[in-house]
Image 1 (tube, one colour):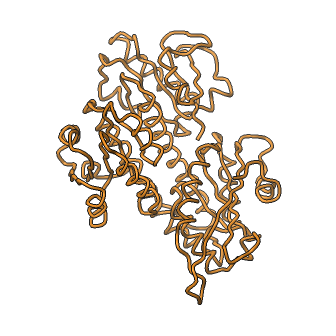
Image 2 (cartoon, rainbow, N blue to C red):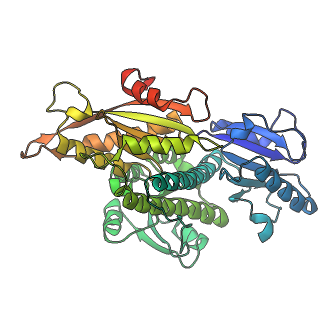
Image 3 (cartoon, helix red, strand yellow):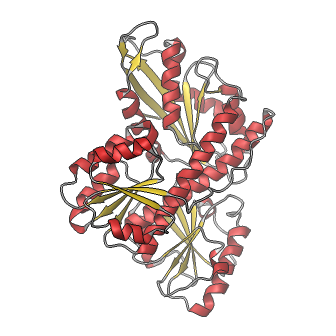
Length: 449
């Protein structure tokens, strides 16, 4: 996903951006600004923003309503509303938005604007927007094959949530107080106890408190991420000041977000709600897509989408006015029983099917995995840049290569290795050519690891 933010400002800054935007730049966002009352049209770069921010700092209370209305007007005028691009208000703590003023915004962020808050909150909102766009695209593709996809509703019963907590316990009561009374919170003293709870009942998220002697908790996070059942499970770190380095290690191990302790109750509740909302929407998509896939053209061996379906879906995407940034991934799969790497169509069919199903289970619901007519597997990652794709693929590879496979009609264990070739492109580019991209993935890869 391209981290590209466009800031609507209440004063004309020219080519500059607000001072607080430096926080965004430090977490690798490309940032541009546009004066709310400018008569200039957006340039091509700004029009491709993945998220909109409205700067309400240093704005008088009586001017807020007019500025919010103007920002909402520009969002629609420039096509961001049609493209499902989220808009977020950046406001001083003294600013109070009415319920009506809150409607255009996916979120409202107030100081302190830390790097972690900006990066994780905005990334979650952008990913949720991607899922909604992909649901609409997939629906159009399914219709081409005579199958209607129901509209995916927003997650329901968000008050009915269950949270698992593990750690020393200093932040347990503040976490409980920050969340609505309808959220059930259960505490575990050890990773073994936490795993026991996870095995016997579903949870919406995990909170890990980091203070002293955290190595076992970091390893617990890593173990969860290697488990396909918890591949995208929301994990929030509550980090004491003396455990900052462990907090960074926890993020590297797969946690979604980090919150410094002590924290604002409103901030924690909002962050928890966004992560749960994102995961529940992803689960709904996965269920609907899985059911509809059974009625689509699929590969006879793996039951993944066929090349016919993939190309039809890409045609739908190309017809969008907004377009998308896309990463294609070619999978080179080999087994220890095979002495030289060969195309997927020459590998043992039963093993190939098992590996394909495992890879599919580790991918996000909005991603698509297909098997081409030449036997190779190809993944399609919408709104995903090369860095984000590599991170996801590294996690997939670590799980697949540690998973036990057995040869058909044999008890001999088989080791599977994965290599990837990647191609990043924009569907709005005039040289976007699906046939050439799929061919180059295996014959002339641009990026391979």
